[in-house]
Each structure stands twice: as C-alpha cells, then as structure tokens.
Length: 192
Image (cartoon, rainbow, N blue to C red; front, side, top):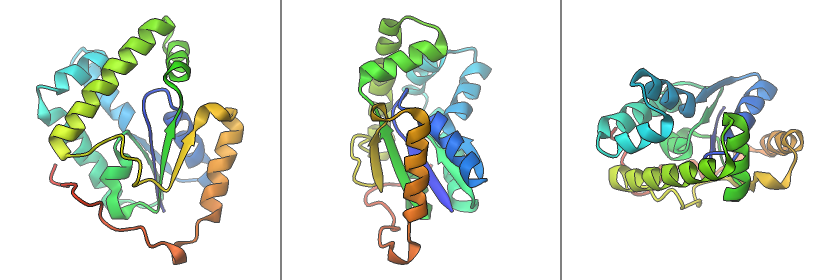
C-alpha cells in the first residue's frame, strides 16, 4: 500500500506521516527531510534554498524525481511531501492533504524551530509563495487544487494522537474493490 501525506509547512504532515508509518509498520519517506539535507549540503536554510530553487530548476526536479521513483517502485510506504499526492499519481492507494490556519502553523513552526512566531509566519508565507510559483511553472500544478486528494483535514481541530487515530480509521475503512480514483492526474507531466 502506498499512502501519500501532503500539506503546507506546519500542517502536521511530518508528525502524522511518521506516526502513520509506525502504526501500519511500513516505511516513511519524507521529501522535507531530503530537501533539508540538500539545503544543508549547500549551506542554506530551507527558506533560502526554496528561493534559490526558483532560479535552479534542477533542485526541484532532482527531489521530485527521487520521490516519483519511490512512489512508482515501492510498496508499503507512507510518502510525505508537498507534492506527494501529485507525484504518486495512479500509484497511490490513498492521498491525504493536511492543513491548518496559518496562525496555528506558524506557532507550531516557531515552537519546533525555536523562533518568534512572526518570523515563522513570514518565512512560511515566503516559502509557500515560492513553492506555489515553481509548481505551477515547472509542472502546471496548482497546489491549491485539492480535488486529487481522498481526504482533506484541518489538523488544528484534533489533538495529535486523536488525529492519528482518524487517519488510521480512514485507512482501515478503505476498500480497494470500490476504488475508481486510481487514474493518472490530468494535465500533469511526470517528466522530471
């Protein structure tokens, strides 16, 4: 089974993807971890690396190629990244989008990274603007189009442990026999 978990920064996707992988006894692959490693290798923060990626298409293409390969060749994986649902295409059994209001996400990021909330909010909005622009330009993906996802959740509405229970219950209720949604996503080029 391939499950994708996507969402903006601070939405809880990393925490929940890791918890989901543990609950299901499958692997967890994080596009964010790969991206942060790539940034650190170049001596940049993720925000700086995001903006640098606006002028260097190879950065996104390299990351997305790696994630797409995982999605198309491995089973028993929770694949987590902003574009995981798009990259997995017909190979995903279930695609989740997690979100929360920007104020909540900024607080989570500030807490996690030990920075002021206003700075976390400003960096998050810059990062989202940069990514939105690149995804549209590179792949013709409108990241705000949530129609490809099987379930969209506002993670601010549940405590973290209760939300993981909801994800596990959603997966337990999944019946592949009634799945008519595993088709390529229209208009997306998978040529990375």
